[in-house]
Length: 274
Image (cartoon, rainbow, N blue to C red; front, side, top):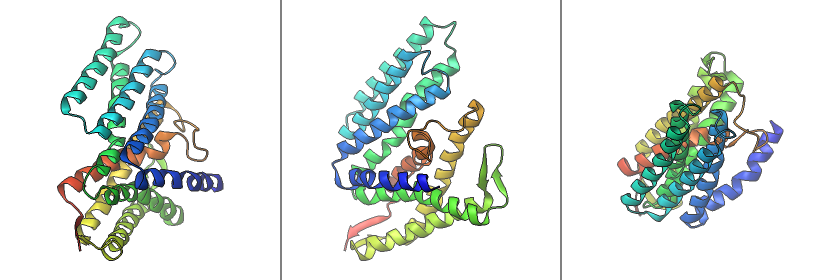
């Protein structure tokens, strides 16, 4: 627990510095680096990282390409070109090694190189939106606020297992605590935006962000836990002591970030400056 806390305290300031004060292209570099590691972790879990090195290379290049594409706001045609080239490479490998490379593993590679980077790159796309810096903090609250609340409330009061075969430590009480903490933190954040930064804010929308953000965080956590259970591993890696790999730490963010992007576009929480 102590090591986990120390690592979090060491990594959080530079992470926030890049997101909040640096130009969006630096966030794109960050998401590209995280995505490359996440791709490797997924391919290693699927048994592809060491036996099909070209698939690993294709997926890593695609992960970087997705982040750059999002940062540049490039036309759709360039995204289509990236998608076409990537799938051509993946299924070219499938055709060439059809006796050893099975279709499910080719699909795992395709998913790893596109879905995870695209969802993480929501942080970049949020920054490019109006009031993007505020919404990117909302995404962090959705993911990490919910996780933190669920962890501590589950430790203190958890009795009933939420999904014992998938994530034995998660409890119903922790799940409820995660939603509550996400909502409370989002309301506090909305108050700060309203009275410190002087923007019009919808507090009802902030509550919705908290509820749905917490649900998205749990979905991401459980989804990647299922993959670990099916693969018989405890952690995706040991890049961050006490936390595991990138997917162990950012599993909730992978789902919460694109939801934050959708909510910011469809139901803005922040209005005009007062």
